[in-house]
Image 1 (cartoon, rainbow, N blue to C red):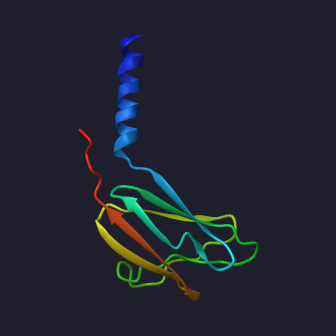
Image 2 (image 1 turned 180 degrees about the vertical axis):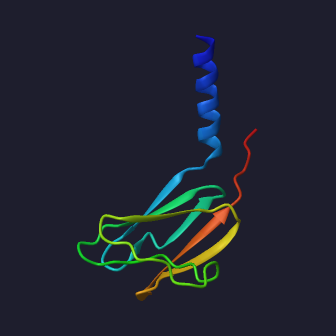
Length: 109
């Protein structure tokens, strides 16, 4: 029984340290929502829910080359460990833009 409690405590501690997942949907050539704020360590998942259109998520300040496209039903994700504001766009559709703002997690202890 003691092993079960130790495993449960470790699982809870690891789950809290990993951050949460935030979803941005891509629909009608828009990032929804386009502006998001996440905590340091969170992962943003962009889900393409279009019927036919491919997209990508390009952080030009972080990655000089345009990333691969992802198609309807596919997704792309990125974990944000650095604080700051990270603008992005869709390479094939430059009018599609968004921003991820990463803030420090406040410790409530």
